[in-house]
Length: 79
Image (cartoon, rainbow, N blue to C red; front, side, top):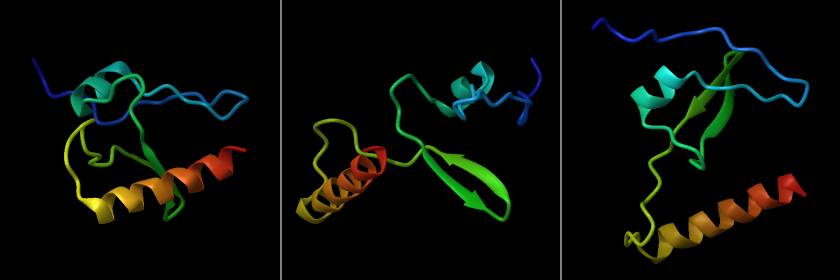
């Protein structure tokens, strides 16, 4: 079996949604419910799967507070 394609065309819906092709999701281990970071970088849209801790994984108080603060920022943008 050959190398998986690293790029594919996708269509943007009127709500701004796109579907990440299955082969790319599988290659990167992206599953339903995963959180992705979206940013603009040099005129490109970049999606990144951040290295979030697994549920129940100890992360330390400082990292926990940072995650809570970021979660609240995201919630405010969604409201």
